[in-house]
Length: 397
Image: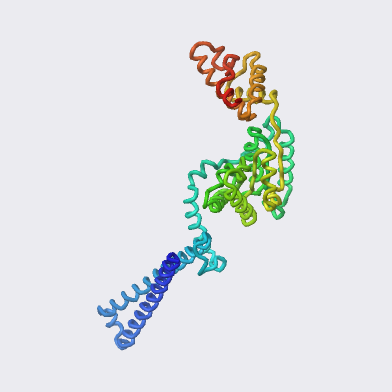
């Protein structure tokens, strides 16, 4: 109520300023006109007098004041209307002005200030850290992936449909997807490739993808506003929510509010962004079925299967080649056996685990090289492959 009174006073102040400018302008015109009539017989002589110069100066000042007051009053009116609408969006005040009745300039001002306010919920730097570029060459990137034959086939089919669709037939809301499968099977990589295809064929305006997890959407009392801020930032690109099933874990009401807000924004901003949800198969099935609105809007489901040990050992070799190393004789089957050991651990993450194994291999190789136990600077041998360590035993308990 106090907020409403404050902005009502500011609005009245704008009216007073505007009205005073009118009165001052007309008074100056009147005085100048009267003086000109009184000296009409000798107008040239009058124009050289000090009184005439004062009248002209006042007239010019009144014109300037009129235009300044006009713009100031318009600005105050816009801000006061925005503040009321802004409060209406947060439930603090539902009176005064309808957003739909405002001019485009006023609505733009409302949207601009609302974004500024939403930045207080999640700052821009945090969102920037979670934002990545989509694939610049999605065709080459999808073909370079190891395994995932069914996923690659489905993505290529979707890309082919996108390519053949005419501009007026493109429907962004029909592109929402759900990626299901265990961790480390390429869901994030494929999401970036999909963003590249969507951008290439004109479904999204920017080749960008905002990557977050389900817990990131929760914000206590500000959950709905946090979701709105995230969608606002992702607009024009792809919103990728990994481990989206986390919305159903922990605080139930926060999760339900986040899902409901997300579904509403999928409808309100259906031409602004593409949503990709990702997570374990069973958990994602429960999440999607928990909300009929979400279920009806997800059009594409892609299943990511776990990698086998042979393929993962090939990926390990790919990492080595990419970093300028070669594998010594017998190292690849040795790596395969090490991966099989890791597969029995509850924290096994497919490609992610292989990447960690490769990073530890480089560390051990550097140590062996320093101590003179290495086969060569760019050769990885069996002694460079780390053995089972306390981390493995810790997670196996």
